[in-house]
Amino acid sequence: MTGVLLHHAFESACVRLPRKEALVCRSGRWSYADLGARVRAMAGRLRAAGVQPGDRVVLVLDSDAPYAVALHAVLACGGVFVPLPPTTRLERLAFVLQDTEAAAMWVEERFPTSDEQALRERCPALRAVLRASAAGDGEAGVAGPDGAGPARIDEDLAAILYTSGSTGRPKGVMLSHRNMLSAWHSVQAYLGLREDDVIGLALPPTFSYGLYHLLMGLGLGAKVVLEHQAAFPLKVAQAIERERVTVFPTVPTLLSSLLGLPQLGQCDHGALRLMSNAAAALPQTLVPRLRTAWPRVRFFSMYGMTECKRISYLPPEELERRPGSVGRGMPNQEHWLVDAAGRRLPHGSVGELVVRGGHVMRGYWRRPQETAERLRPGSLEGEKVLHTGDLFRSDDDGFLYFVARTDDIIKTRGEKVAPREVEETIHEVAGIVACAVVGVPDPLLGHAVKAFVTLAPGATTTSRDIVRHCQATLDSHMVPKYVDVVDELPVTESGKIRHAALRSGS
Image (cartoon, rainbow, N blue to C red):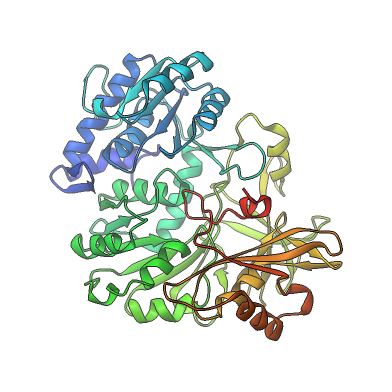
């Protein structure tokens, strides 16, 4: 990896490997030379549209070549990219445009003209709206492949990534070039991605997990395959075979769907060498199934959050030895657990996870109060460390085990219940594909434990079966009072189950 800014590695790859295939997606197959030319052209168009260093550019694009072009073009002209999924509703899009005072927006060609006009009227800072079909137009003011262009340093912002906003207003996580490169270096150190890798991305690259794999892949000179049909697991499995994918990041919902495919054994995934899981905890019931399906693949279970990208990973050789663990932390990072008073806790304790490192965000965009709650003084003068708001248990060797978000803890009968422990127990029941446990108001209990589950095709498991299993396994206050079998669970674009939506019934 070369350069001090996030896009320099990609620019270097375009010079070193012009004829190599860089990107495979719906719009075609792109070499590094092709992709680099489009980036230079669009950087010129952005400058011609008045985008200045430090300006925010909101990207509302599909998982396709224009999105990869957009990321690097915004950075090449000194801007700050703000990615949003193309399914973003108009009100949320207007909020982000107003909140960031975005100078430009890049949308799909099919984006409604009426919506564009409405946004221009509501967002006076918005000077330009570009459409994906124009990705290759214009060469004026182009930055050279060596990264020449507006003077920027690694302390400058590279991106603002908005949290899902399942409760309250969404917050923009400010990440500098240094933040993102620090995370990149650390993740690269333990995953060991290579120039000859083929990275299969069925995850949306508008969110942190997919975004970093896209940036790392193109920065290393690897090939990235954008598979936009994650809702159809057979197509994903076939793409892994067809493109000889070697690296495949996944989430539990996608992994469970792949493992449930009757045709999975007929697919040749012999090139696959590395898989990873993040975004949500890996159900332990999936571990033996993934070992059977991909016996030679190294599988990393990981934990992170948008505010610092990644925090911990579990080495593949520890997957069975330490069930439920997400590891001990990644390189170039310090972390520890604290009690409610902020005191450090020894190994073997349960407490809030605190993280220190160059990958920790600069703060929440224009949210000083929320920033102060998360970023608190560290041991060094002027230093800020990240209080994650997540409860973890550590074992005697320092390996971490996720307990719950502090906001998700269910208080029932005067006792505290960690949803994940109940979810893991429910996953032991035959036929369960996905599960989410929440607390719902109850006049007698304060809150009652409620489970939502989806079943595999043909499964005959009933709510009563699930309750009986929980009664035989869990303490009485942890047994769900209600179990709803549903067709599907609400999930975010990044594959996380929306627990807040289940609690509110929305």
